[in-house]
Image 1: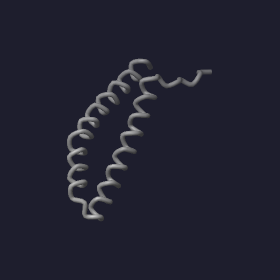
Image 2: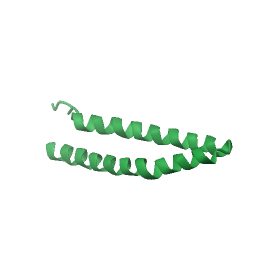
Image 3: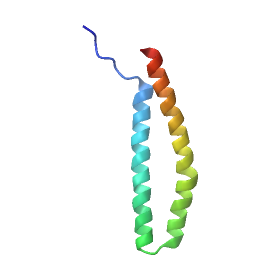
Image 4: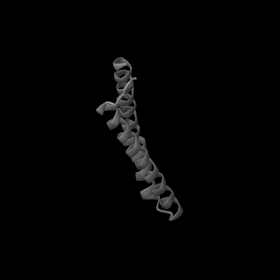
Length: 77
């Protein structure tokens, strides 16, 4: 009988980062919607700038980390 394989630390960290990335994206979305509803154009444009610059690059890095974790898990099996 085979023992269930435990996940590597890299995969666990990747899943946690994906979770917090998505939570941050949801928070920015809610803040943007609140800024639009309250007619705070300066805040809305700052949030859009943040989403375009910082979160887009974070998504690219997170995608690379995800690919490394998947390749690492595939090589282990």
